[in-house]
Image 1 (tube, one colour):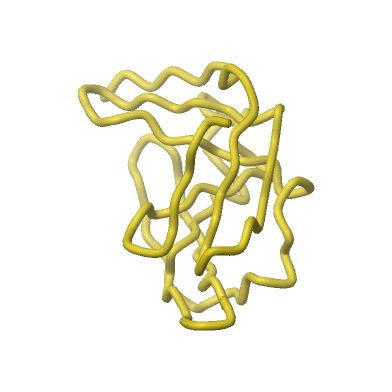
Image 2: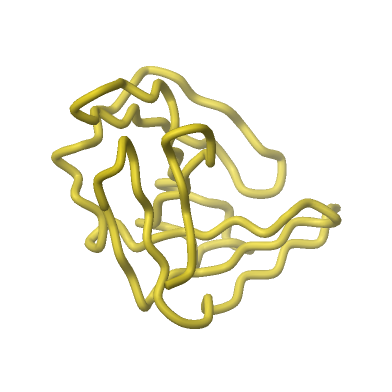
Length: 113
């Protein structure tokens, strides 16, 4: 099994899409899986959900479970399937339930402030 660690992310984290801040959290989680770069998971309550539109896309991770996806609707562009969430994660990673993660790409940034 790939080793997964979940720890509180230090400081305050912000996610921006299309130039707008769509979320800010001092309660984000940092998930590290094996040798992959860490991913910041934001509590759902700290994200402006009005900018997100659920899609039908799903993926399955043997360690985390089934991920559902959202697109980000910014003024200038739609970022398709740019957000994922494990709504019923496997017990070993239960801490990420009700959290969202973002694909960093041109126009979408996740950064510590």
